[in-house]
Image (cartoon, rainbow, N blue to C red; front, side, top):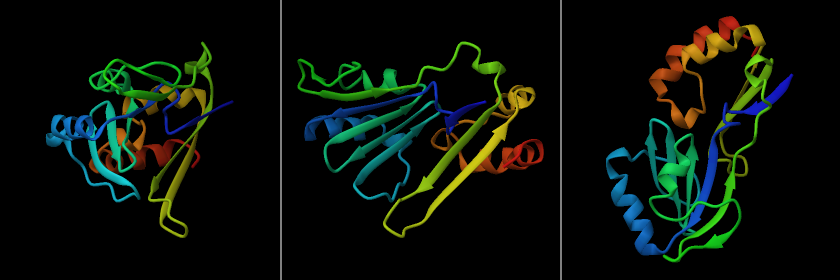
Length: 167
């Protein structure tokens, strides 16, 4: 059995440290995709079909999801270790776990969480065991990281997942 978090094992998390001017470019570029995030330090957030973009008051901008590399490369050079490019943007970290070659044939436990994570603040965590014979069904339903799904889509697929898998 394998373990994966939020169906993101093949997704990327990329953090760029950007100047205030470049942060404003990010906000302007994704203005039509803006979403509300009330987590501490978040000053802007946007959601695309395959990527979530979060700007923090620290100047860091996190790109998450399958489209993270594409979107982050609009604002800085994406590398595997900390460096500074010619525009002054620092890529702090690229993260993406390499899955085993036969992952699609394995039973997995997936989890995801949402919430602000404040010291006694609200956090919701869900986990599900997906046996290998149900992986095609879960993929067909469109399950993925919650940042990549709308609330309506989550509500639509939840009953099928709950009826098909141990949670």
